Image (cartoon, rainbow over all chains, first blue to last red; front, side, top):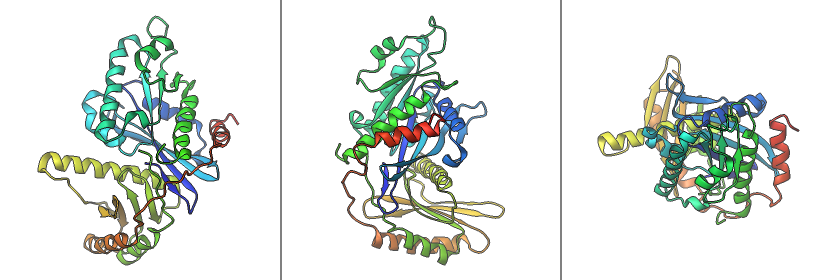
Length: 199
Length: 157
């Protein structure tokens, strides 16, 4: 649920990075945190296990500056990807304005990607949200790995992007694609906001 | 669901009164999804968002855990640290449930905070607007602003 304050002309939106375990959701946030100047970001909160796997969520608030005269802030969340954290994924997904699905491009992870995408749709449906109306982009992460280990972007499009949503090739560890992904989901969320509630 | 919420400061006065009467240091009124409606005491808006995200997570997990082990959601929470304590409670408004996070020290007590939370609940119920606007918030041509600002954030401007 985006929050619009017409009095102070502020907009706050919640973006959730979703995807299977170890696909690179937290890595996306770490890269963004490293790039954004300190006066335009809050603390990055990571509720993680001792082995640095996300336990509940990662959270990074960023200030996008003025857009159409509104001070615009995005709250970036990740969910824990492991199958057994289903409950916490549901909790983090509540009130999301947009979702970045971070897919792992490795060939051996294709089934996990599919199951996580199905899990996303099921969790949105549980919350009474029609997945077709939720702003969504897909990021094909780890495209920097050797070609023999990964699926190509066209292959991943064929397997995962049945809705034809905007998609981005990425290497979140080193940065390529992270900015483009954030811009993609930002555009979708703000476009929906500019069209009104019923859009 | 994207939902526009008109805040126009309606929650500011009830929350300020709550802070003064319960002798709090910091208080935030927020949606259960972690979106802030009003706050008193924080200096930096991005810190407020972090506090809201963590509070919303505590509330959501306590509700779920309560339902699992006791059949009904756990509501209301109190932690006492060395110097400061927090109270996290629910505040019904006409169209949704809100959360309040109250931070206090030895100048107040849990009993006082809980007492004034009841008054806050009544004031919020009386003050909250019942309808939300549906008009678009942004101009249609927001992309130029968005692209410029994101490029600046990522050092590409």
